[in-house]
Image (cartoon, rainbow over all chains, first blue to last red; front, side, top):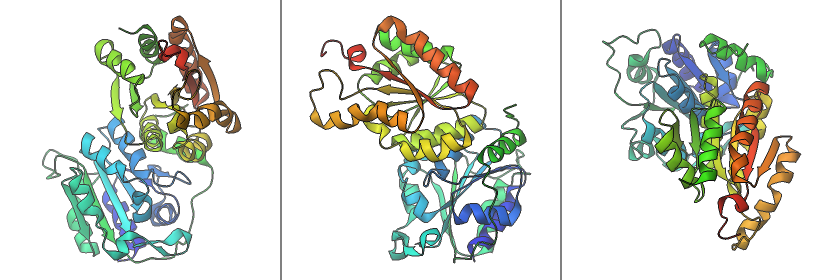
Amino acid sequence: MTRFDATRTIVEIAGDAAIVSSLGHPTYDLFAAGDRERNFYTWGSMGLASSIGLGLAIARPDVRVFVVDGDGSLLMNLGSLATIGLLRPANLVLVVMDNEEYATTGGQKTPTATGADLAAAAQAMRIESAVTVRTEDELLGVAWPFQGRDRGAESPAPPGPLMIVAKVTESAPTAKPPLDYIAIKQRFMAAIGNAEC
Amino acid sequence: MVPWASGVCSGVHAAGSRDVVYVPDNPLSHVLRDFEARFRDVRLILAMREEEAFGIAAGLYLGGRKPTVMLQSSGLGNSLNAITSLLLPYRIPVLIVVSMRGDEAEWNRAQEPMGRAVRSIFDAIAVSHVTVEAADAVAGVIRTTGVNAFETRLPAACLLSRRLTSPTVV
């Protein structure tokens, strides 16, 4: 499964959910997989995508929030797992695209290449629903209860946040979102009903 | 009840902020207790590190809230990438309340370099800041700082001096 394949699957599952992406390749792939009003693309603040998603999930418990993070990015902010495990927002889905390298900066290996286990770290921080997937079928199987368009009472979604570590291979990004930060923000906020103006 | 700490809480509340993300600090413990005692509608959110606190605050803002971040001045160094590459380019406002170390009567030299640099750093990244030294001014200054931040959609900081927060030491 390439990172782009996994990103496209997440966009399909997300429906009308919000998606926050980490800078670099995750942001580029999210734009290429499906530019949508409810995408919040970060262009900086490496490591903070999960924190932004957490704040959004707390502020808007009625909105399903997906985060598309990277292994290197999450490793910069591992404390975020403890905070998510403390607050446990049930509407948060943290997807870590684990390609075992800092692909955006030239492919230097991350600790996950030699066995560091981010799902185990999340479980240790009380994110019990933390799983590692290696194929699109596995990804679909884990994520489908969180479909943005299907939030009914019958949804079998677990009572806390979900973290998916998707083992992916690197796929060269094909497009980038515009660099108009304020437009990205205002389009996103308006789409989820928090218009600034 | 500690008057300056009550002032912080009243000011944050009057600025319309109901979400306070914080990294603990000794003087700020008085503020946290006052929030819990007098403002039960304020959500207190613990962060593991200051940069993370600003990330959470940004998400809260995207979700329609008016966030406050409370931290010790030493933690400003941990926060700069979040402030400069997230809050500023995206125009995401946060009311920043800084408990100062390294100013008057600091006993720990390790706190001095960052304490001395805080105002210069805010100036260098063009984040407006104001320092409060009198307990009876705290509420008004924080309210004004917060209202201005949220109206202009820019972060703004209120620095609580040690003269204010640790008068028995100073």
